[in-house]
Image (tube, rainbow, N blue to C red; front, side):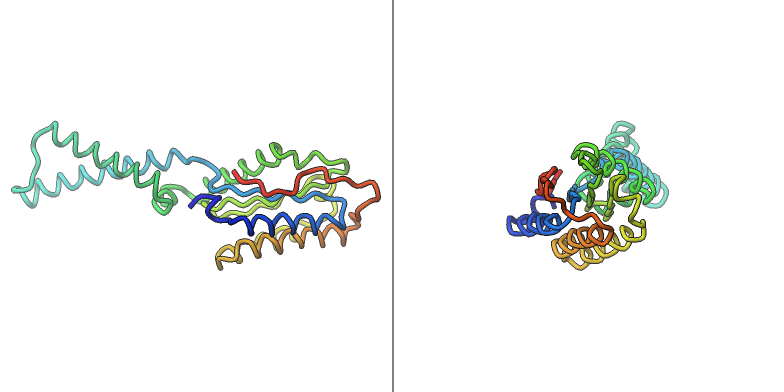
Length: 216
């Protein structure tokens, strides 16, 4: 499933309106960024290829030992079958997310997601506000990861447990299939947190970052 398939136009409009509503009372900027996966994870394809090739070679040995009538002795055929097993393994990892995840450790995916989130924070210029009051809500669906990153002006006064709680709620909604509900609630909660911390909108406030959902 692609990001575009996850959200219809009505969903996108709901998210955009939630950002507008939250920002209507605060001096901060809220930036939702969603990606299907945080990396191509090419290493997973290589690992699956090795496992596929090894599995075929193992089967050739088993057939040779226990079922001689099915045994393969031609070196060229053995090579071809082993390569085919590797190719099929790589294809499965490339196209089937479940297989790709099996080839990756959680820590590896966590690192990839964190790096992609940090890059998105810079690319979307979430830092580029007068009072350093940008907040990015980053979701990477393949890894089932949510990261909330606040700029310096906010992180200095808002406790990390606030963002951790928000992350848990978003993940719970995603698991229940209520993706848009979770995002909408998180955006509005960001507005409430900033309001509680005194980031009230000023008379000369301007919308420094666009309200649209960033889809990559």
